[in-house]
Length: 166
Image (cartoon, rainbow, N blue to C red; front, side):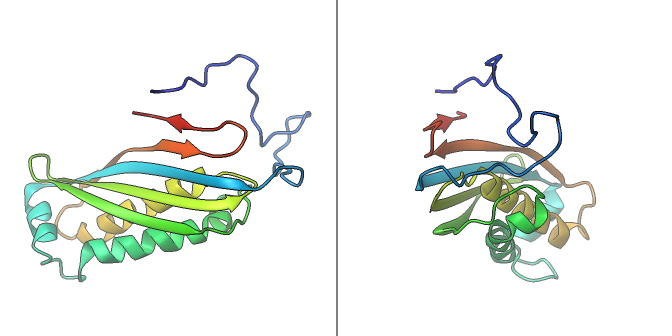
């Protein structure tokens, strides 16, 4: 089920009444269990994919390095995205699914927190940085690697409840 966000009375939450950027005030919100899942894909040449799959990349084991980079990025999201809240993560995890036919790796980042605001940005940042790490570690074999379809797949918790992008 995909929920639409085409509601005409929706506004940009990070702009105040005069259109100035500001951090959303969450002080009046209740802490709830929150979860977000982001997903993206890293597509590369057959040769680079073969090196990645064989763990023959000269910079070391690519996917474990990308996993750690993604988790670290989730933890540092507020340092990278100017108006994000610093929030306590109870979990940040990265999964990889290789696709031999398309020479690609799907990157899936999951973040959870019991807090007053969602973890969508943490999941999106984790996914993006994990994908960028794969690029960095494989670029010697293929400078044309493509990061694609990075998007939020799922979120739950808070006032807006559950949302899926299937």
